[in-house]
Image (cartoon, rainbow, N blue to C red):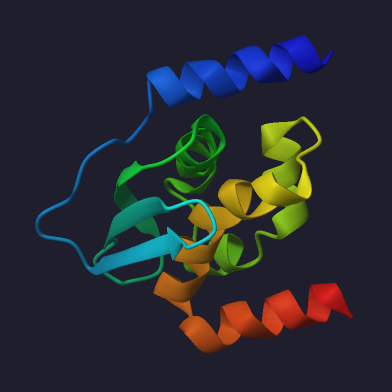
Length: 135
């Protein structure tokens, strides 16, 4: 079963969906994983009424897990309301990835969710989520 998920990760790494930068963008945020040096820039264009994600793009450098999770998360959020996107949890991202991640790779897998969360809420919300899940 894990072979399917590994192939999916490699496919998303090699053929990253929504790669690039939107210009103009309503939201532009870059997240960094200082442990391994992964960088991910997220740009979003919102619907005219600012309630849905109309377009998105990711750009960055990093391992296959961080790039694949950004690509998969992009597929998940395009066209969704901001309320639906804000409800996405770490477990949702782990489910997308589909394989167990070592402690060293968890932050890689969650970098795209961190970028998205901080872009939509701000750093305080990401830190509250991190603390709540550690408790």
